[in-house]
Length: 497
Image (cartoon, rainbow, N blue to C red; front, side):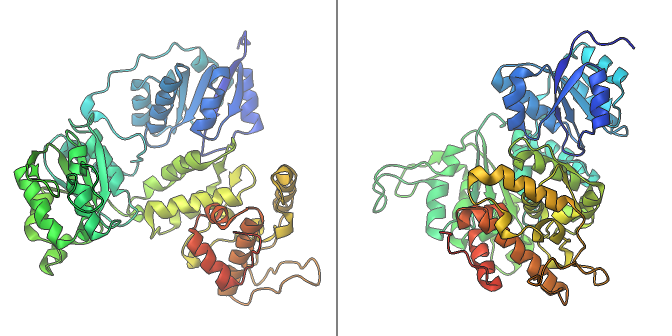
């Protein structure tokens, strides 16, 4: 093989596997100087110094679309090399159609293959059809999800109302955006309202608007969501929570395609598509007279169901990878170990995608290295809680930085301590060695072990932050939950606001 005449700088984004020294050496032999990046923001910062981009795709080409959009915003056009699993032929074809310069097997690091790919002329992107447009933030990899996506794109082209059913946190609003972006109304606004998030007396004003002087404090006219969405889509989330007296008014608007503002006398024509979502059984709600039957039939011209995350296991790892790229900070290039991937796939995910996002954010807090391990995964269900003591409980509160200037030294020291083998407190046959006479006793049972782990994690977060709000964000919980846990576990934090 001929030696490359010059070195090209390659930005490397792979949330699934860290780049080994041997792989980096083979890429260097192909004339590529590799610069790993962890997020799209890091990619944006290094674009001016790069010559090529290498992406690892899993399931969908959405990451390629995101990078292309980012380059368009920055006014540059670097060639993109995509890495996919050998079995994902359709994904390789889709990447080439979108304009990737070349597609390589994810496990191919040979110098010859990468030299050929880096010198290959760019492929001409094919014009995308408007009806095939999808949201850049969605992941549809599992066969059940792919079938749902194909059906949603077909339904999107028909001017019908759609009722989206599914459990909380499964991604109903994501599917609603897919319906909007795949329809002829894609260039119009997408306006969403959570019917359970507002008091009864505000929902009507939010939906239909009001005239100036309609009530005390109405100093100027207000356009409701239906008017704001003219030519586009209105998404009514948690529609089952809408007050019964407003259901009749909503039904009239849907039937007549006209509305009257509060305090107004003139009917206004509207041109919107209505999408609704619920996590309840609306048929049962109509039987108990909690929801109008005529409104139910008006909204459910076509029904789509978003499966729970446990019913589409093929989406778990691609979603986790997307969340890692989204939430990793400071240029961290993280990968997920095979054992941690197995833990993610085997968890039942009662909280669906929202729970997965919490688990990923907790792992980012606990992981001080480049690989997320099973001990970094904290699940909401205590029965599934992993052994986080090896990574977190061994970090004494005093080891966390007292000031921001001490952070690099303290974190490096913690990383060294964590890297050494530590016996698991979960194994009665292998109790942890006690460093001194003040060490805590071995937990008597699983509940006590979970409490000790949780207490250590909260102490670590409290000692390394300046407020309860920051500590709660670091732990992936709400400030209210943090206060409750601190009181329950008797964790003191006199320095916190």
